[in-house]
Length: 281
Image (cartoon, rainbow, N blue to C red):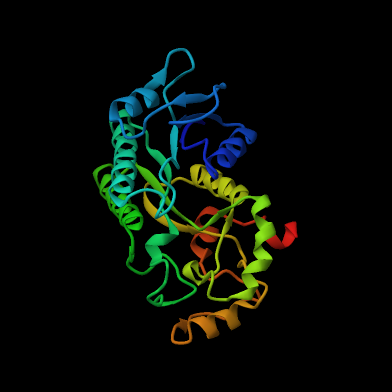
């Protein structure tokens, strides 16, 4: 496929970019910053004119796009003032969604966020493992934007029955060099309770995007994308019992099984996490 990838210069984006190219796709990186190299198109994603122009084709580099992977954003709460986060992320996603609609591009995979599940879980989750079945619970401006993006995607799919939108609620993205800090988490089980001790290896993020593009079917779907395990050495059952004693556990948890439920992504996409900190240790 010919794919436009926004945010391809970022932590997750550059790994996804390399992965999609490695499996044979033609991918262009639409980002505000990046190296001057083949495939990089400097684009302000908040500027609708630039976005639709870039997706339509740039000079002799390419003509038309088959799919869009939208990862470009301020990537977490607290990195910018709330109003700046809202403006940047909401306008960027609107520009991408509207431009794809006008151009007839019917395959979108984009980064929602695990934060819509209720992070930082100062209020207990409704049950563990969490999944995509309960109503979003945004607790920050960043998360509120992600919730609104999902609602916008749902309505666009209603407008266009052929449109496929996969919203990935990515967990905390990690690169192999980040794993050196993981053993330090064991000292305080509450230190990482904010996302139920979850993470995602960026390489598995690339795998998930590839599978969603290949399996695209009409309509909107949200998926939790996380590693198969937690960041902790302790058992998942003991962590849940100590830190969330009043929360219902809906299944028997494996020794280090993630509490960010990835069953839906496994079932519908064939997502199968291959990487993690225990293998790298």
